[in-house]
Image (tube, rainbow, N blue to C red; front, top):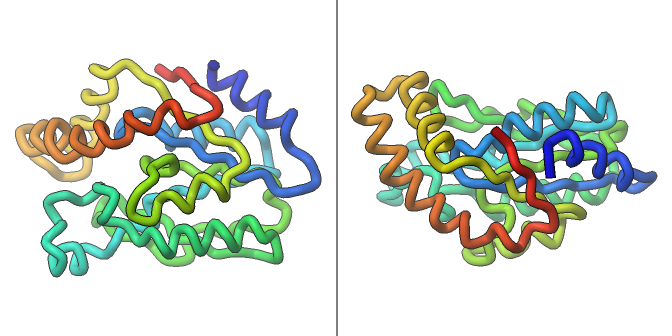
Length: 202
């Protein structure tokens, strides 16, 4: 399925009830870009809710000895993410959600406002289809799930460029993309077939 067909499919599914759409994929696959472009195509009814706002704080990751694995399933506030998805699904009023600042690699509280007028919520993140460590509670809260497919070499090249852009040396960027990121990607790949829709991007 192309991104254009994906947006068209969501239009056909939108109704009076709020539609929660999960967009999953490996690091660097283009989830954020697909979510943003789909929201633009759908117009004012749509809003993007990134999972990245639920990264645990850097200080907490250091305490837990997980800083060097940042981005792994156990480096997120899964319970908080599930709780917020439940509030969004309840559709009882405005909901404030955290964003994520890649410059400092910290969540930004209240960066995203989900209003009653947002009838399509595009939830994007790596572990939406994961089934361990509390993540298994996520997929049942989503009405539609999609997995982003992209050329592997392109995905890794994007990751390296992203890490370099946000402050890592070229060597460190390559090491992180092919180390921790790739370990996480292997976990995420195993969840691909759980998605209802497969979206190919380039």
